[in-house]
Amino acid sequence: MGIGWPWALLGLLAVPVLLLLYLRQVRRRRPAVGYPSLALIRAAAPVRSTWKRHVPFALVLAALSLLTVAAARPQVRTGVPVASSAIVLALDVSGSMCASDVDPNRLAAAQDAVRRFVRGQDDNTRIGLVVFAGSAQLAVAPTLERDGVIKVIDGLTVGRGTAIGAAILKSVDAIGQVNPDVAAAAPAPSLGAGPGQDPGPDVPTPAPSGSGPSTRPTGDYAPEIIVLLTDGANTRGITPIAAAQDAAARGVRVYPIGFGTTNPTALACTSAQLGGDMLENPGRRGFGPGSGAPRNFLIADERTLRSVAETTGGEYFAATDADQLQKVLDELPMRVDVVQKNVEVSAVLAALGALLMLLAFAAAARWSTFPT
Image (cartoon, rainbow, N blue to C red):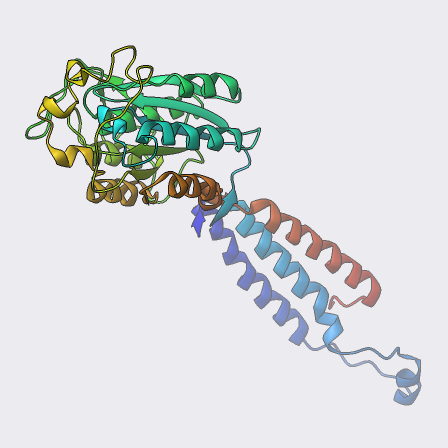
């Protein structure tokens, strides 16, 4: 629980002061009055409980306490349903998506599952699409219109390289277009790459973590999320861990999905998926059997993807076939439809305080209890 205006709680000091004054007034003896018969007074006086005379004042003190706390703007951390948000799908279209260990190949299976996922979302949920191979591109900005997203998914083609980190930052940038609390990444001409990695083009520079108004406390997430589907390991550009740290600083959760088996088989993309090139000469695109690509780049880097999920507050999923991928995507909304937020409860406390004050006046009018 947090307090927006803690100095307002100083008003609670008045409560014990008022209580002491009230007790002093109650204990003060009244002067004796001469009367010939006390029995007549007892018979004429109405019968009433002793405790009733103190109820109105107790209600007034409780009301003042609640109103004072309400003025301090208290906040509680609770799960809030996401009624209207955005999901940015970051899809790997590197050459390894031609692997046929998933029937008919990884790319075709992913296209089918993602199409169903897009169509199954709530009408109030915006869908964005980032595609990445050697670079990351925003293919469709978050939108409520589904046909355009489906059309782009249908026309995906593979490319060379796998820039997972750049895809994360590009997705955060896309979320910043619909949520002003999430700052966009600023482009830069180049970024240092990790050992054995090519810098690659179109890699955005992350904003420094912990700086600027966009930085969020740990665990304070935006309702928008990134669903990252990849079948390999990062080969160029900013590392996924560095990108995840930046996403976490901006309050954006990443839900990575590692797709494919650990035994990738022959590449089997269609001519359309190759963008017009024929599969008989896959080396032209630089990702075929003769390209010299290390085998581990054809297998999802689970260790890194788990770290990305943990860093950003998301969750990692593994899918080795089309059915598992579809199940992961179908169940995903149930896992992310609630976010933790600080909710101010001042209005509730103020309403309760006002109600107690009305009850105090009603009790005073009924029982005439205030001491004199």
